Image 1: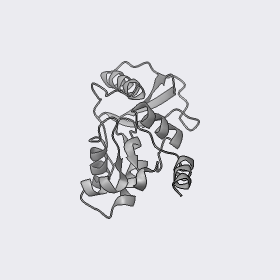
Image 2: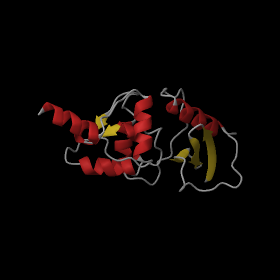
Image 3: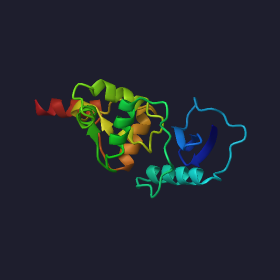
Image 4: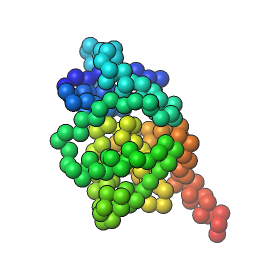
Length: 171
């Protein structure tokens, strides 16, 4: 497997490919591997992944995606990730709604675990999944990324402070 750097205005994302397709996508950050010889996109998969990342950061739907390699993950997680790909740009779903969609109403926490283990965030859009009450919940790339991605899609999530102010004003 090889890592490839995807430079963006937000920093360099890192994509890792197997012989089957895109296996991992990491956000820019201090825990990202350092690439001594970062390669320019040369393969079709690199080009598709780069175009998809840039489109998503602009709040657009990618035209084409590389094949995704989810080998080695559980069937449950793969079902969850398939459901996440059904959430349209600018839309959200809750962890419990996804649990219903995968056929197990009691699997809300397991859905959260699958979202946290998502190896290809952005392309498998776990940022569109919210906690109960439309609260932000968690995100493997960090909450600042989740807020940024939701905002670029036109989705506004009230912060806890805003929710508290609203509740206080209603009293």
